Image (cartoon, rainbow, N blue to C red; front, side, top):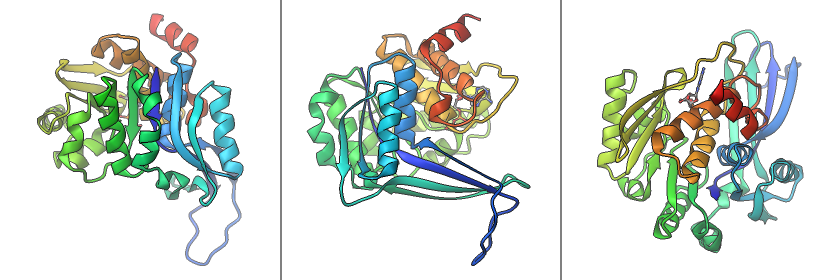
Length: 304
Ligand code: ADP
């Protein structure tokens, strides 16, 4: 039902008292490794939320590639269009965190996923045409995202573009988006409009719709989300969470959940609520993919 085009990245987080300076070797205070990458996080969120889900990407023939396949197979994600790149490594992110200040310094290398091409997407046309919802982001080459959106729209599949990280793009991309889902900062980068106020967020959403998107859906962290476009204009508040543990991946949880609800035929406002519930559950657990809730958890949370 849901096809996600995007990246897998192994996240390796090192904690030390402070960040190292040039030429320095520091003893660490902790290390954690886990599956990441926006596309992979979103496909896991969708699969756990109850949709048949498939991933289109490239990984290397290495241990992080094994980690990716294990991550997907545990949640039943269809990997028939995951290509193994013999020449490139699987994507990885090294994250240094200062335990004193919380500051971080990160290097992300997309590895094999940087080689994802429009031709790879065309090779998955059969998979895409059979989906209800197609989701992509900007961690792989943009022309590849453009080709995926174009193909999906051509087959009448509902398209969701999560434009993250925010990069300068030609407005033509928005014409094939049913929903474009930036967070506050991404919306500001894409439109040049300050989104700090409700009024600013609405102006940014209107700007994305003027450029051709059917709907803009701007997530506003703990405030909630703003939906604007063919579905009307709706501010949907976030669920109140008393104990926030880790908000990394909140947007991925939201997008995966939103896609599932749209695939199930819910109206967009209900779908935003469903996505918000998935995100609210995910921020109460550490990690990104491992923090995604199951359908049983989501239904119980919404009923409560
Ligand atoms: P990103 O993770 O991409 O920066 P946001 O921070 O906008 O995205 O969060 C996405 C969605 O996750 C929000 O619209 C909201 O529904 C939910 N969310 C994020 N932070 C919280 C929080 N502290 N409490 C409850 N829900 C949250």
